[in-house]
Image (tube, rainbow, N blue to C red):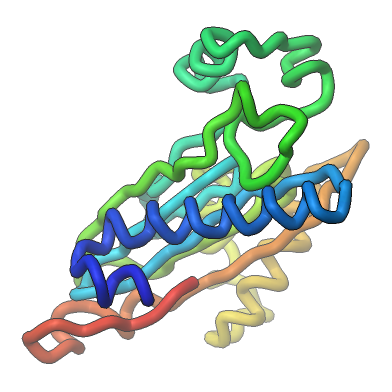
Length: 215
Protein backbone atom coordinates (compact mmCIF):
# COMPACT_ATOMS: atom_id res chain seq x y z
CA UNK A 1 0.00 0.00 0.00
CA UNK A 2 2.90 2.35 0.73
CA UNK A 3 4.36 1.75 -2.72
CA UNK A 4 0.97 2.03 -4.41
CA UNK A 5 0.32 5.46 -2.91
CA UNK A 6 3.64 6.65 -4.33
CA UNK A 7 3.62 4.93 -7.72
CA UNK A 8 -0.13 4.60 -8.53
CA UNK A 9 0.81 1.47 -10.50
CA UNK A 10 -0.26 -1.71 -8.75
CA UNK A 11 1.96 -4.09 -10.76
CA UNK A 12 5.12 -2.14 -9.94
CA UNK A 13 3.97 -1.52 -6.37
CA UNK A 14 3.64 -5.28 -5.80
CA UNK A 15 7.03 -6.02 -7.36
CA UNK A 16 8.67 -3.28 -5.29
CA UNK A 17 7.02 -4.65 -2.13
CA UNK A 18 8.38 -8.14 -2.84
CA UNK A 19 11.85 -6.66 -3.46
CA UNK A 20 11.68 -4.71 -0.16
CA UNK A 21 10.70 -7.83 1.79
CA UNK A 22 13.46 -9.82 0.10
CA UNK A 23 16.02 -7.18 1.09
CA UNK A 24 14.84 -7.16 4.71
CA UNK A 25 14.85 -10.97 4.93
CA UNK A 26 18.34 -11.30 3.42
CA UNK A 27 19.67 -8.67 5.82
CA UNK A 28 18.08 -10.42 8.80
CA UNK A 29 19.41 -13.84 7.77
CA UNK A 30 22.93 -12.46 7.42
CA UNK A 31 22.81 -10.60 10.75
CA UNK A 32 21.59 -13.69 12.61
CA UNK A 33 23.76 -16.11 10.60
CA UNK A 34 20.68 -18.14 9.64
CA UNK A 35 19.58 -20.06 6.57
CA UNK A 36 16.10 -20.54 5.20
CA UNK A 37 13.57 -19.00 2.89
CA UNK A 38 9.93 -18.90 1.92
CA UNK A 39 7.55 -18.97 -0.98
CA UNK A 40 4.98 -16.15 -1.19
CA UNK A 41 1.53 -15.80 -2.71
CA UNK A 42 -0.36 -12.51 -2.54
CA UNK A 43 -3.69 -11.70 -4.20
CA UNK A 44 -4.88 -8.09 -4.26
CA UNK A 45 -8.49 -7.26 -5.15
CA UNK A 46 -8.72 -3.83 -6.74
CA UNK A 47 -11.23 -2.28 -9.16
CA UNK A 48 -13.02 -5.63 -9.59
CA UNK A 49 -9.74 -7.23 -10.66
CA UNK A 50 -7.53 -9.80 -8.97
CA UNK A 51 -3.80 -9.11 -9.06
CA UNK A 52 -2.21 -12.45 -8.21
CA UNK A 53 1.51 -12.31 -7.36
CA UNK A 54 3.26 -15.65 -6.94
CA UNK A 55 6.77 -16.64 -5.96
CA UNK A 56 7.40 -20.36 -5.55
CA UNK A 57 5.03 -23.32 -5.56
CA UNK A 58 1.92 -21.99 -3.85
CA UNK A 59 -0.88 -21.39 -6.35
CA UNK A 60 -4.18 -19.55 -6.75
CA UNK A 61 -7.14 -20.37 -8.99
CA UNK A 62 -10.59 -18.97 -9.72
CA UNK A 63 -13.47 -21.46 -9.63
CA UNK A 64 -16.18 -20.71 -12.20
CA UNK A 65 -18.93 -23.30 -12.08
CA UNK A 66 -17.40 -26.57 -13.28
CA UNK A 67 -14.29 -24.87 -14.63
CA UNK A 68 -11.20 -23.16 -13.20
CA UNK A 69 -8.79 -20.41 -14.24
CA UNK A 70 -5.19 -20.61 -13.01
CA UNK A 71 -3.71 -17.33 -11.73
CA UNK A 72 -0.16 -18.48 -11.09
CA UNK A 73 2.85 -20.21 -12.61
CA UNK A 74 4.48 -23.07 -10.78
CA UNK A 75 8.06 -22.12 -9.90
CA UNK A 76 9.61 -25.54 -9.63
CA UNK A 77 11.63 -27.77 -11.94
CA UNK A 78 8.65 -29.30 -13.69
CA UNK A 79 8.46 -25.86 -15.35
CA UNK A 80 10.99 -26.00 -18.20
CA UNK A 81 11.49 -22.22 -18.32
CA UNK A 82 12.28 -22.15 -14.60
CA UNK A 83 14.68 -25.08 -14.98
CA UNK A 84 16.53 -23.35 -17.82
CA UNK A 85 16.73 -20.08 -15.89
CA UNK A 86 18.38 -21.76 -12.90
CA UNK A 87 20.76 -23.83 -15.02
CA UNK A 88 21.81 -20.80 -17.08
CA UNK A 89 22.83 -19.08 -13.85
CA UNK A 90 25.04 -22.05 -12.96
CA UNK A 91 22.65 -23.91 -10.68
CA UNK A 92 23.01 -27.70 -10.55
CA UNK A 93 19.94 -29.91 -10.27
CA UNK A 94 20.20 -33.23 -8.46
CA UNK A 95 17.07 -35.41 -8.33
CA UNK A 96 15.04 -32.42 -9.53
CA UNK A 97 16.24 -30.22 -6.67
CA UNK A 98 18.62 -27.27 -6.71
CA UNK A 99 21.95 -28.54 -5.31
CA UNK A 100 19.92 -31.57 -4.23
CA UNK A 101 18.05 -29.49 -1.62
CA UNK A 102 15.51 -26.96 -2.88
CA UNK A 103 12.50 -28.06 -4.96
CA UNK A 104 11.63 -24.51 -6.04
CA UNK A 105 13.23 -22.07 -8.47
CA UNK A 106 12.12 -18.78 -6.87
CA UNK A 107 11.88 -17.73 -3.24
CA UNK A 108 12.39 -15.03 -0.64
CA UNK A 109 15.61 -15.58 1.33
CA UNK A 110 17.62 -18.78 0.71
CA UNK A 111 20.85 -16.79 0.61
CA UNK A 112 22.99 -19.88 -0.06
CA UNK A 113 21.17 -20.39 -3.37
CA UNK A 114 20.36 -16.78 -4.30
CA UNK A 115 22.90 -16.66 -7.14
CA UNK A 116 20.74 -19.15 -9.03
CA UNK A 117 17.22 -18.14 -7.96
CA UNK A 118 14.87 -15.27 -8.71
CA UNK A 119 12.94 -13.35 -6.05
CA UNK A 120 10.65 -11.55 -8.51
CA UNK A 121 7.01 -12.70 -8.57
CA UNK A 122 4.91 -13.46 -11.62
CA UNK A 123 1.81 -11.26 -11.63
CA UNK A 124 -1.46 -12.30 -13.27
CA UNK A 125 -4.35 -9.85 -13.64
CA UNK A 126 -7.86 -11.27 -13.79
CA UNK A 127 -11.13 -9.34 -14.14
CA UNK A 128 -13.88 -10.71 -11.88
CA UNK A 129 -17.11 -11.67 -13.66
CA UNK A 130 -20.59 -12.51 -12.40
CA UNK A 131 -19.96 -16.16 -13.34
CA UNK A 132 -17.06 -16.56 -10.88
CA UNK A 133 -17.66 -18.46 -7.64
CA UNK A 134 -14.48 -18.67 -5.57
CA UNK A 135 -10.88 -17.54 -5.40
CA UNK A 136 -8.73 -20.28 -3.88
CA UNK A 137 -5.18 -19.76 -2.60
CA UNK A 138 -3.20 -22.70 -1.23
CA UNK A 139 0.29 -23.94 -0.48
CA UNK A 140 1.92 -26.81 -2.32
CA UNK A 141 0.97 -29.28 0.43
CA UNK A 142 -2.68 -28.83 -0.52
CA UNK A 143 -2.10 -29.00 -4.29
CA UNK A 144 -0.08 -32.20 -3.80
CA UNK A 145 -3.33 -33.78 -2.64
CA UNK A 146 -5.79 -32.16 -5.03
CA UNK A 147 -5.02 -30.65 -8.42
CA UNK A 148 -7.15 -27.83 -9.82
CA UNK A 149 -9.52 -30.09 -11.74
CA UNK A 150 -10.03 -32.35 -8.71
CA UNK A 151 -10.67 -29.28 -6.59
CA UNK A 152 -13.56 -28.31 -8.89
CA UNK A 153 -14.95 -31.84 -8.68
CA UNK A 154 -14.73 -31.90 -4.90
CA UNK A 155 -16.54 -28.57 -4.59
CA UNK A 156 -19.39 -29.95 -6.70
CA UNK A 157 -19.38 -33.09 -4.54
CA UNK A 158 -19.55 -30.96 -1.39
CA UNK A 159 -22.54 -29.01 -2.70
CA UNK A 160 -24.42 -32.27 -3.35
CA UNK A 161 -23.58 -33.88 -0.01
CA UNK A 162 -26.05 -34.20 2.85
CA UNK A 163 -23.56 -32.40 5.11
CA UNK A 164 -23.52 -29.33 2.86
CA UNK A 165 -23.26 -25.98 4.67
CA UNK A 166 -22.94 -22.61 2.91
CA UNK A 167 -20.14 -21.33 5.16
CA UNK A 168 -16.73 -21.14 3.51
CA UNK A 169 -15.10 -22.66 6.59
CA UNK A 170 -17.09 -25.86 6.05
CA UNK A 171 -15.98 -26.00 2.41
CA UNK A 172 -12.37 -25.30 3.39
CA UNK A 173 -12.34 -28.07 6.00
CA UNK A 174 -13.86 -30.49 3.49
CA UNK A 175 -11.23 -29.70 0.83
CA UNK A 176 -8.36 -30.01 3.31
CA UNK A 177 -9.58 -33.42 4.46
CA UNK A 178 -9.98 -34.60 0.85
CA UNK A 179 -6.45 -33.41 -0.01
CA UNK A 180 -5.00 -35.14 3.07
CA UNK A 181 -6.77 -38.38 2.17
CA UNK A 182 -5.09 -38.43 -1.26
CA UNK A 183 -1.55 -38.26 0.12
CA UNK A 184 -0.44 -41.69 1.26
CA UNK A 185 3.24 -41.18 2.10
CA UNK A 186 4.60 -37.77 3.17
CA UNK A 187 2.14 -35.02 4.10
CA UNK A 188 3.34 -31.41 3.82
CA UNK A 189 1.73 -28.51 5.67
CA UNK A 190 -1.49 -27.27 4.06
CA UNK A 191 -2.70 -23.68 4.11
CA UNK A 192 -5.91 -22.81 2.28
CA UNK A 193 -7.83 -19.55 1.79
CA UNK A 194 -11.20 -19.39 0.01
CA UNK A 195 -12.79 -16.08 -1.03
CA UNK A 196 -16.42 -15.82 -2.15
CA UNK A 197 -16.17 -13.87 -5.41
CA UNK A 198 -19.93 -13.38 -5.64
CA UNK A 199 -19.45 -10.57 -3.14
CA UNK A 200 -17.14 -8.81 -5.61
CA UNK A 201 -19.12 -9.36 -8.82
CA UNK A 202 -19.67 -6.23 -10.96
CA UNK A 203 -23.41 -6.09 -10.21
CA UNK A 204 -22.63 -5.86 -6.49
CA UNK A 205 -20.15 -2.99 -6.82
CA UNK A 206 -20.57 0.71 -7.39
CA UNK A 207 -18.67 2.34 -10.21
CA UNK A 208 -15.38 3.98 -9.33
CA UNK A 209 -12.02 3.06 -7.90
CA UNK A 210 -12.21 0.57 -5.04
CA UNK A 211 -9.50 -1.26 -3.13
CA UNK A 212 -10.92 -4.38 -1.54
CA UNK A 213 -8.00 -6.05 0.23
CA UNK A 214 -5.13 -8.52 0.36
CA UNK A 215 -5.37 -12.30 0.54
